[in-house]
Length: 131
Length: 100
Image (cartoon, rainbow over all chains, first blue to last red; front, side, top):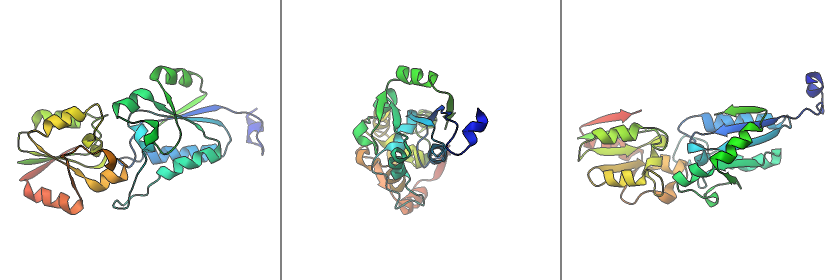
């Protein structure tokens, strides 16, 4: 079965991948690295979801302007995810509320889920990667 | 007086909390890097920072605020400084404590 999956067109094996993002952008490299892993993995046409919780919700904040910093603004790249069929982007309600953020503050459409709902989603996954 | 710098988000790290237990009235608190999330309205720690602002001068590094897209919600009264302003602060205060 694994051999079939490695052939062109795949063997039809699809797994549910969840990426958990809990770090603010720019202060550490986790947010950018996670996004890059998702984009690389998307080439393998798996069933990908992303969760943003704690300071990870800030990765999606609108209005990032790095012109005075020596850093690349990678927030537009989150808008490219839907071109790779990565559309299940979840933000934790509790984290958003703690930061006074609403979905209107974010660069992409997201689904707001409670922690309990995210727990259910996590149990449904085959592979979970945390950043 | 001391200039305290905070470079971690107080929403997920206790450096600010410990700093504020120790910081004397009249000292300065400068938020840099992810620490700038401590200078914003509408968060669960806004009240703590506003309380600290009554007795200490609070600053935030503007390039780090802008990079994170949170220039739309800086607490009124927090002084934004650029890199050269950062240098000026380090000479204006007697010494610096960097909370990591």
